[in-house]
Image 1 (cartoon, rainbow, N blue to C red):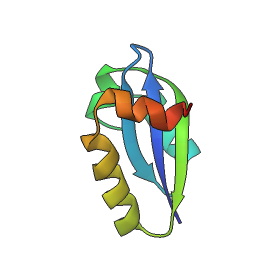
Image 2: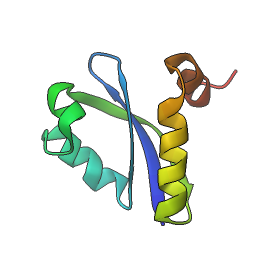
Image 3: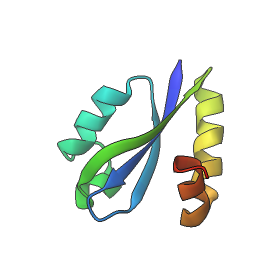
Image 4: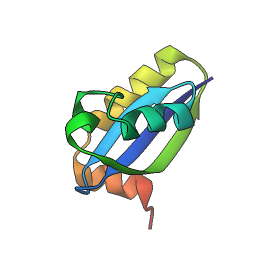
Length: 80
């Protein structure tokens, strides 16, 4: 099982990634070993998760969401 996750950084930017263990991955981002972006943009909290059946599906969904403008991502996080 894979998860897509979106993290809000302390500067209010959004980071999207995938993992089999979101809690572990978030801790890596907190310690700034989780990736280049979150190394320079400290993380605040996980704001969205989505369960996917396999790595391929997770990568596809991640690419889709990363291609969206911020406004569309926010509608995913906060549907009206």
